Image (cartoon, rainbow, N blue to C red; front, top):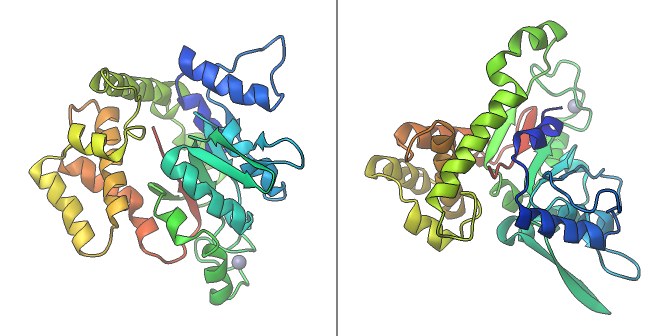
Length: 295
Ligand SMILES: [Zn+2]
């Protein structure tokens, strides 16, 4: 439910983005004369029973874009992520780094854009009852570990936010939803954060903290001495890889943007490390929603 609400938090596509996304949807034959342009960030939620070419791209004759390309500049949601084929997980690595996917076949190859925001949801075990005390779960510890390990280390290292969601009662849902948590209120904060990023990168061709290539991000977005020391300590203690350090820094900048700060402080970096920390344990997450966040 959270994942399906997510696209509503994102701003409209600008004209250039709209044309870029519409081209991909046009190639896939998904546009109509009545609605020839995609103006909102797309939301794609392929099922784990879908064919690999329909998720990644490919096809029997003409090479067509898959769900990961149709989600370009939008959101790709993989519910029950461990159930997807290992080839789908492997294929996500390239687009998560470069924002595009290369599809090679014996009779030709194609390259499609695939710069999506990835949201993964995972049950703690195959039966789905392993949350909280896990009283109803009958899965063995080994079976739980195997299930979780289907989301490989390289994919986990590219996940910026891990959030555990326990079942909530109807009454809790009713009382927890306040005005500050409404979609409209949160999307206004996201829009303000995007505006800060636009101003910061106004002389560059990129829009968000996630978009900047590593060299440009390190040059334009350094941390202060205290904050940088926190990240360096996490790397030195083995809790964080170098790639993880880069991603934590980007998330810290996004937290600062969302809170209206000019640059991140140590508190923002601690928050970014905390949001990622479950992913660093290397152990199966307990009742987790795994989320990659590119705001
Ligand atoms: Zn179970």
